[in-house]
Length: 397
Image (cartoon, rainbow, N blue to C red; front, side, top):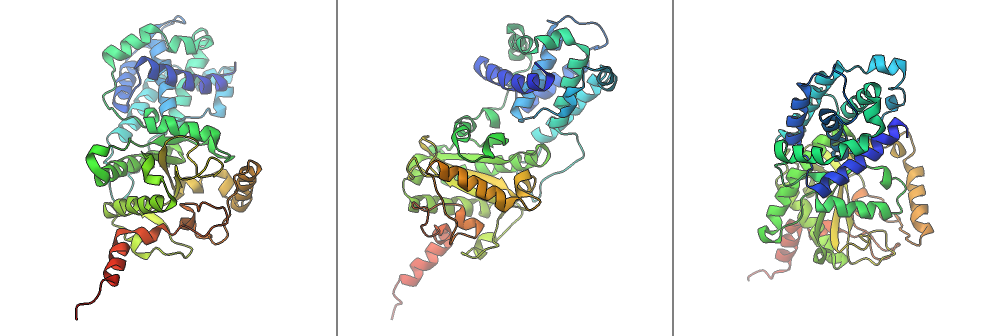
């Protein structure tokens, strides 16, 4: 198996194994493990089953899993003479320190801020590939069985005893993410399977709608921070099934959700005051515009907004900056890509029609019938409903 395939397969295997064994990492645990490994002497010869080497492979692959890292083409040449010169063992302490620094940036970022923090740190995409390349270049015996060595009982024991996860919520291991990925695997959207996604925290009935919106806002800000550097595509929010038992109910919940987010927007956008059915409007939050897709239990199985059999309401947020990076939506390819997606849905009897829904926000929610009128969710905004109610009340004479 070539190194690129070992990386991608290992990322998935180690992530699933860590979840099954209860040894998944969060950023803080990964930082501690990276700092521990950076202190080791990597110049000494190591056997294939060396425990520190297995911990290094586990750290690289589990981190790659949590952040959806793809295999870089550099892995193709890391075991050549040129690759061994380029990816030296002397690099390990410094690259591990860089890994810890980037994880610390993500872990310690504010829960919300007026704008997304930025810096010049290396991405986890680059760092995990570089670390894996060093392992492949200089520890070929270990690389030959890297998956098995990364998932040994001894590795689990060390992680559990010395580097335990402390955060309950880790996006890639959240129930929302795990279920949503089942929908991604089944969707007719031709671009969805290649995407990098996270799931927000689950909805908690006991704390009420507003408190849940605030928790989601924190998760959305964290996602946007990571998505900028790591090229993620979207964040899923899972709500109770009853919140989409009709298109009208889904429109109401959409309006309440966006209104709640707008009220706590750290950048202070007043975008909802301007929304109507005209083109050009964008929902803005934390200084970024974004697109929203709503999936509801009201839709039949052959509808493109059915949540693919899962008994939940889903909202999928995509900041515009991730869409601008999508190869199918740049360089004049957007209309071609949209037609390809439409054709894929139509092939399976799941038509949708954008006639009368040219405005992006008119497509947040789909009507029950493909050629039905746009679902004007903005009419359900609390301020507008209140104004309409007041207008209906008789004037005292």
